[in-house]
Amino acid sequence: MIEVRDLVKVFDTRGQVVRAVDNVSTQVAKGEVLVVIGPSGSGKSTFLRCLNGLEAFDSGSVSIDGLQLADPKTDVNAYRREVGMVFQHFNLFPHMTVLENLCLAQKVVRKRGKKEREAKALALLDKVGIAQKANEFPSRLSGGQQQRVAIARALAMEPKVMLFDEPTSALDPEMVGEVLDVMKTLAVEGMTMVCVTHEMGFAREVADRVLFFDHGKLLEDASPAEFFDAPKDPRAQAFLRQVL
Amino acid sequence: MKHKKSQWPWHVLTVLLLIGLAGALYYATSLMSYEWRWNRVPQYFAYHAEESQRAADISTVSELARQGDKAEVTLRNEAGDEQHLSVDANSLQVAQGDDVAEGDVIGVTRHWAAGPLLWGLWTTLWLSVVSGVLGLLIGLATGLCRLSNNPTLRDLSTIYVELVRGTPLLVQIFIFYFFIGTVMNLSREFAGIAALSLFTGAYVAEIIRSGVQSIARGQNEAARSLGLSAGQSMRHVVLPQALKRVLPPLAGQFISLVKDTSLVSVIAITELLKSGREVITTSFSPFEILFCVAGLYLLINLPLSKIASRLERRLAQSD
Image 1 (cartoon, rainbow over the protein chains, first blue to last red):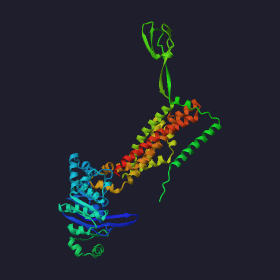
Image 2: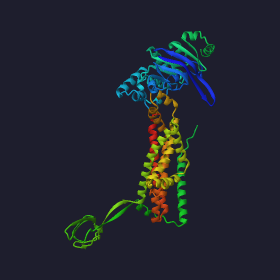
Image 3: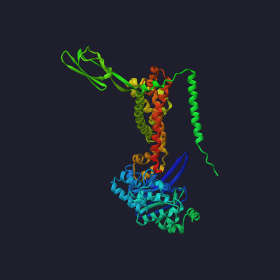
Image 4: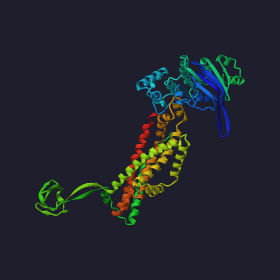
C-alpha cells in the first residue's frame, strides 16, 4: 500500500548539513501497523512527514496505492486527503468548535452536505468517546480529549492510511491510555497505520512490524517479538537498554 | 496579611489635578486678555438658514392666506399665469393687491442647515471610512503577497511597504496631488483618498503579515494534511485566527488614519481641520474652535476604540 524507495531528506541550515532521512526503503501492506522508534533527532518524524508531503524530500520516491508523491502530475491535495495525520501537539483549530473542526475538511475538500458531514462527525466523536463535547471549543478539552478529537478529525476524511507523529508525547501520563485505546481500536479494525511513538508497550502489543531509526538510517525492520527480545543492531540494543 | 488599600482618594487626586490644570490654563489666557465666547460656537455646527422667495414676473398679489407661521401668496401676471409661494408669515413683504416687479422679494423661508464644522466632520468621516476600507483591502493583499512564494510578488510588496513607511504622509499627499494628480488629472479628493489608503495599506500589510506569521505552523500543517489547498488553509484556518490576533493593532491603525485625514487639508479638502480654520477667520475665536475640532476627532475615535475592544472580547470566546 505504501511504498518508500531510497528516500533521502537533507536539512541544510547555515552550512550544517544533516541527513535527516538517509536512504530509507520500506513498504507497508494494507491493514499493517508499523511502529517507528528511535532516539530523538533520529529522523523518524521527518520520515513520517515525508510520507504525506509535509516535508519535501530530496530524492527517492514515496507512493501510496501506486500514486507517486514526487510526480509533478500528482495533485498533492488529492494525495493528502487519503492520508490522515495526527500530530504531537494536536493542532486542533482553536477558533472552531469540535464539530466544526471535524466538518471543515469534509465541507471544503470532500464537498459533503451539512447533514451528511455532521452525522459523520458525530458518529466519529461517539467512536472516540467524546460525543458530548461536540459544541465545545478545543481549549475547554483536556489533552487526551483534544488528541482524540484530532484522530476523529483525520478519520472524517476516510483516509486509507493514518500517520501518527508521537501522538502521546505531549500528554499527561494519565491521558496516554485513552489515546492509545483509540489507536488500538483502529488497528483492530484493519486501518493501515504508521506510528512514531515512544510507547514501547503499544509497539509490542499492536505493531505488526517495528522500524528502528538512528541518524536518519533505517537500522532494523523486524516483528516486535524479534525486535524487543533479540535486536540485531548494536545501537538498537543500546537504545532498548535505556528505555526498557 | 495583605491590606487592601482603597483606590478612590487617588482618583479624587486625579480629578483635582485636572481641574487645577484647567484653571491654570484659564488664568494664563485671562492674562493675555482673551475673551472666551463659547456662545458663538453653536452657529458653526448648525444655523437657521434663510432663503428668499422672489417673484418670477411683473405681477399682482392676487391672494394672500395666512396659515399659522406660513403665508401662502398667489401672484398673477398680465397673461393670467399664477405663481404660488409659501413664505414664513413674519417675513412677508407684501400685502393683498400690491404690484411686484420681477425679482422682488416676497418673503423668506427658514430651515436648519448644517454649519461648516458639521460638514467638516462629515468629510473627515467619509474620507476615513473610504480610505480605511481601501487600506484594509490593499493591506490584506499586500500582506499576503509579502508571504507569497513568488519572488516578484514578494519583492514588489516589500518595495511598496518600505517606500510608503519610509516617507512622510505629508510628502506623499503632495506627490499624489501635484504630481500624480496632475499627470492623471485626478480630483483632489481622489488624490487624498489614494494617498491615505496607500499609506494605511502599507501599515496594515505589516500588521497582517506579522499576524499570519504568529499563527503556529502546525495549524497550516494540520489543514494541509487534511487535504486543504494552501489558499483554503489560509482562508479557513490561518487568517481567521490571525485577524483575531491583529485586531488591537488594526484598531490603532484606523484611529491613526482618522487623525491623519487632517493632513489632506493641505490640498484644500475642506475636512474637519480646514473647516475649523475657516471658521476661525470669521469667528475670531480660535481657541474655542480648535477645542471643538479636537473634541470632534475624539468623538470619532473614542467609539472606535470602544468597538474594537468589544469585538476583541467577543472573538475571544473560543480561548
